[in-house]
Image (tube, rainbow, N blue to C red):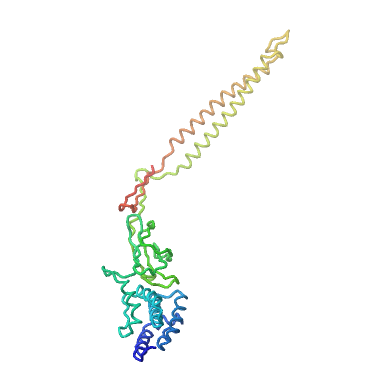
Length: 344
């Protein structure tokens, strides 16, 4: 049974808690019920309502710290030392400056003292911390979780003011590496969550994010003033057209050559070797056809060759594109690298 003094202290602590967390209680009715139960020194109800509020999830850091404090105090009063120690560990992770009233009984303070001893470190650092830094061409996410209470970590990022923040959630790890995003600046904020997605730690926020310089990224095109840009399309079309016509002329020349060979075979064949008349008298029209085919073959061959040469010369004489250069500073593993790309 609790003494009259302990009941008075519990009510007093609860009144201060109620006064300092009205906003959180409005957003989570179970938190308000847990506070009322604690003020009434009803530890069973306090434990139940705090547990329900935490399992509901989505509590901010202040509400999370208070709910775990209520749960730890109620569990300690009900002789659930292990549950109380775990709850106090979460409360201290969310609020490292948490202090329990020294007037409470040793039974209620013992789990808190054990959790606080585990949270203390020689370097004076808080038991729970999450940071992001740039190392060369990588981002390194570093987690310090001395009490082993983190269930997941969240990294919210964007590279422009006009963008919405994108969330990446990871399992807890002491260090995690990510490639450096593109852009001049990274805006981000961090959160550590318990297994019900209640906030145990946060650094930065959507309205006031951290800012990390990623390096200067610029592209500066350059065109030589002595070589103004000229449209090469007409030259290329002309060269292509001449080449096509040259190939067509070559095809006609080949056909004429084949026709000439047919006429020559017929001229030298037995049909033009009858007795009583000369070969010309017998096959004069065939010889004329042979000569015409030969002349056409020679003409189309010469014309096709001229067209192909003209197309090649036109393509060679077409003005080239002006020289351009793209320059940019890019992050590298050892620092910043200047990249230069030219087009001739």
